[in-house]
Amino acid sequence: MKKTTISLAAALVLASCGDGANNDSAALAAGASASPASNNVGKIKLSDINLGNMDEAKRIEEALGEDGSSFMYYVVRHAETRAGLSSALLKPDGSEPETVAEAVAVAKVAKEKRKADREAS
Image 1 (cartoon, rainbow, N blue to C red):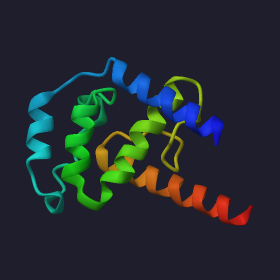
Image 2 (image 1 turned 60 degrees about the vertical axis):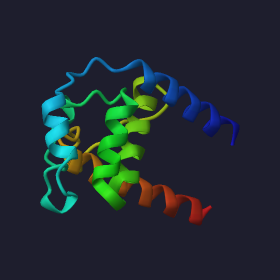
Image 3 (image 1 turned 180 degrees about the horizontal axis):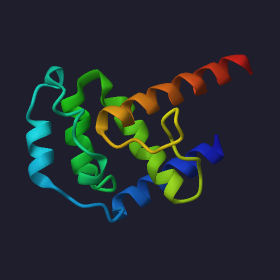
Image 4 (image 1 turned 135 degrees about the vertical axis):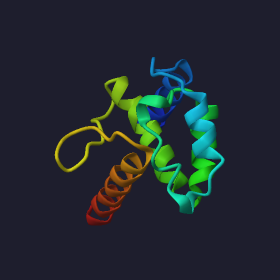
């Protein structure tokens, strides 16, 4: 529990510092104002989002509806990875996700694996 608490705290601190990514507010506004069912939010490129800006991440989380928690899992894991506390969440081909939808997909797989590992132990 202590390691998890430290990792989460570190991730949140790092996330608030920003990660140097481009901040394309127009792309974010267009995606976040659209219905999640239209897939516009999922099409937002991660390179257009400052994953360290919790206000941006929160708007995307809310726009994604039930998939929002998976996106936030990706955001926290991204911060942990940048801090050297965790491994990156990658697509099956070993590349990094490029869009919000891909980030959600890899986060869902990671969450399911984590759940299965906990149940097995």
